[in-house]
Length: 375
Ligand code: GMT
Image (tube, rainbow, N blue to C red; front, side, top):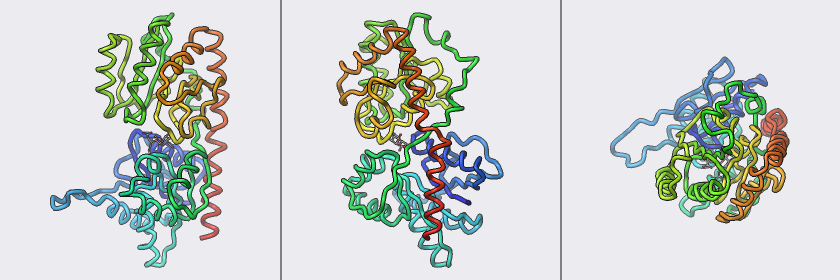
């Protein structure tokens, strides 16, 4: 199949999933066209089967907001015509499903029929999409998609609760390429990061408010009072500065490394003992899955789709949002004893196998095939 993929190309779960999906589909013989405003961060190699088409939005001073949706729908139209793209798979309802619908209508006018598959990732539904300013347009574009998928059962239920959806929503969980995460790095630089007796705790995110970044610092502060530990903070975002200040106030700045964005999180996860994800909500929590695939147990909240990913008392522990004490105690339970830690690490790896890319990507292929057949 010739598939056009639209996503946010930045460091964020939806862009990562879309990129990994496209790459895997290309390995399975499909021709993939990424259509977005920047080359996706995890899309390093373009091949005969993987193409990237940049959406340019000309700056015009008259416009207070530059019309990205318009530029995207025009680009989609052009690329479908030029490359014979058979199906558009858009990740994130806002504004991608909306722009794809516009492109679909324009193409129809020219006698070209292209179905749209929309994948809901979470923030497009729970945090942004349900805002009254966006809700009618989001409802419309979901209902006009030819197929709709959601990355967790919880997100599907939220979507049905918050919007008047007339479409069937298929749950296709996010996935992981285990080969990428289970390589035993010969150059895993644990000793450069911590002493032999120290535990390494890691957090990776885009440091948005929803990630509850201060809770990461508070939990770590509690842990390091009881067990020698270091904290690896990976990513960039609005809450980073506050996190640095909080660490300074606690007097633990020397125990924390702020890395900034990284394309090689597997190289940081390879020496990590525990992953912290105290988010207010996560439709899925892809990063928790990435941690588990690297054999890192997860301390997370029990919000959103996280209980579908992290299994309480097995791959890690789940707590109520904001329950710093519970998260601290759970963390200690895992890391204080090396044998317990070893068991949780092994369990985390085992749990991640339920999301093996090779089993999940065919589910998208099935959706594409049935959508094309019924179109
Ligand atoms: O969580 C973020 O800040 C990024 C966001 C996104 O839009 O890329 O992630 C969402 O999609 C990911 C991939 O499906 C999920 O793993 C994240 O849980 C989800 N984030 C939220 O629901 C807050």
